[in-house]
Image (cartoon, rainbow, N blue to C red):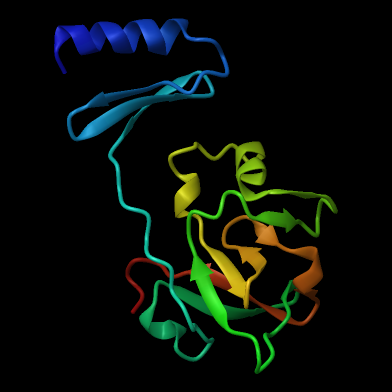
Length: 157
């Protein structure tokens, strides 16, 4: 970055208010401040939503389904399953916490930086959010003999 941009990073990165969301664009990357630390962030596109997903055809996607003692209930035949991204405004009642908040609020409380939040995947049965992968399960969809959707490891087929 130029000296001007470096000065801007120093001034805004060090002297901004504690809750300020600083982002200084530097060509193909940005310097962002989150929780008193500076991060170099390379932008990446938010994945496209995946519609009509089932446990059996999830193998070709980036997700897989595992049986879980504490998971979400299996979907019914008349429920469409899909994965959506950029779901920050959706509401979720986490089973563990028993209160309803937006996904963005839950992710913020979990310490997830703002630039990562749009990349979290939500599993929907029809239009009802039942799980946010990596965050939790909606209380209304909880089952003691259910399933969990998880991200596949990069080396998995």
